Length: 72
Image (cartoon, rainbow, N blue to C red):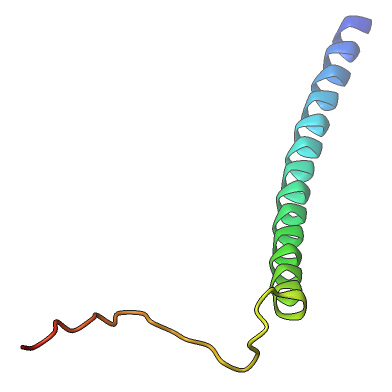
């Protein structure tokens, strides 16, 4: 009789441990995402506040522009 209760207890313990591991994995993933978001925000703020560029207010965007060939 004691073996039956022991097996039932071990089964309940295994189920609770599995649920706890899933919960911990979810908490770890959410924490990693939140920390990554704050890292990106602080990186952007630090680059704007302490950037090496001394020319503030002037930004050059050169996306998609091609140099034209010289015409002789």
